[in-house]
Length: 341
Image (cartoon, rainbow, N blue to C red; front, side, top):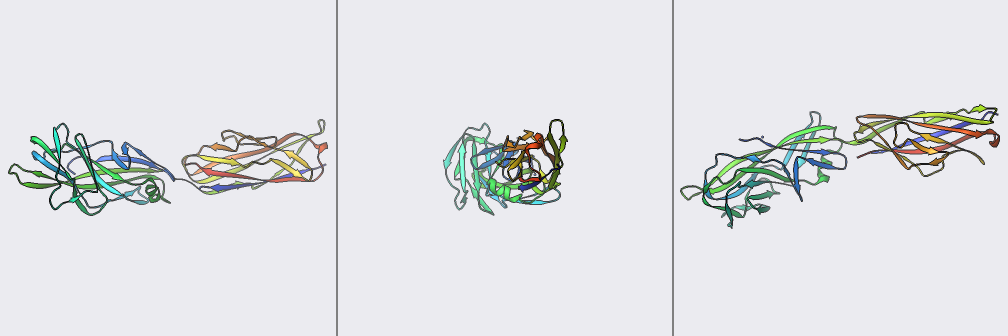
């Protein structure tokens, strides 16, 4: 008796810088997440961890912080692709250092108030969601004796994660760099008692690492597996094995997941059946199916880069051929491979 066994294996893809040093901020972006590094995220506000020092300002007893936002757009490039980030708002945090101060609710006459203004201790944070605009805080800082008005500044901005991810959609992987200059101005009372203004610039440099994880294609070799049984006449048993090579191409920086359907993994011929085993040496866990029964609904496949190759090994053993009817045994098995995010 000569019996042939056929497996049809289908794989589906589901994947889917001023007069002082600039502060720096970085982030990791994938298809569905944003992870800010060396940054302070408070509510909607995102700021670099470090401050920019400011020196040689005219001493004063009264001053009002402001900003002069000319653009909320950051142009980034990785040398191949360009990304434009449209920030929802841009602002600045002023730090008075050790100056002993008090705040007065005293908006500048004829000035525009900033969209948001917050004060805490020796810090004032102001932002604007309009461009171009020159705006000031409604609070005036007052000192008992003339001192330098502030010693540090730190840029602040807002952008939703969804908008960040959308900006990188379909771009190549890599580190995208760019600089956002933030013009700011403050008013102060000079030694003659006259209110005057000074314009300065802070800079915020960006380094955004984009790691998309997406499948472009899957190559299955062979898609149809023929298994010829080996006969043990003494035991009246048969066994066989065959392998399928699966090559996944795309942006695969976070690994892959292989999903198995909840079904019986058996080769069928009318009323006869042969349970099979399925192994994947590079998967974790590796024994996927034992004697026709699924052990796990999914398994992890490591990958990093633009291509991953793994094998599905099909086998059966110890099958009494006296219990089988003559003919072809076959079945269709569907697997899903998905890029991790």
